[in-house]
Length: 263
Image (cartoon, rainbow, N blue to C red; front, side):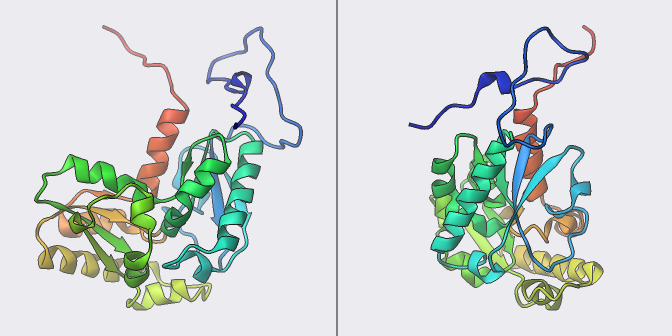
């Protein structure tokens, strides 16, 4: 049986301090981070909007680096070494006091159930976890369009099912792997042109909705796509969700604040 988190660690936001004690875990070295991120160490520039850029969010995230190759994660099949390393990273983040753990790559969805079973705080592996809610929010004749770093691999992977997607017929997967700047990212060259990537992604998005007008909403799988969500929305006039929208939603539930105002 999993040990439940000590409720005395849940010190809520306040002005000043109460009279009760606060407790600290042996080996914990940092405080104030509600969200922990399993951070793949990759030779990729992380611009604002990327999960790996600390400027993306107005609150602190705690990063736990994990050294595996990108090919092992961006894969159509779960890799046993990634499972073990992801569990180890998630447990360390939990030991450091985070209230939820997140992956930083959409393909972490391949490991959603295994990591969730191994820790006592919630695990949000992937931006793809938002798809079931999006499908529920739109009409039965409408679809969710997913733009991903690698279309063939995501299509063949069990990632969507592990995120709770039951009807794949209402999910349209389109990959950006053929675009030059995405190739540079996938090849971890250590550089790419965000402006060119944005142009390429908006072209991908426009082509996707032109080919299938029933696509009502768009989900961006890859964290490198998120900085361009605003431009994609402007190009196709559809709602767009991604990793930052998921992180902000998770944080809102982890750190509740009192309502203020007047009646």
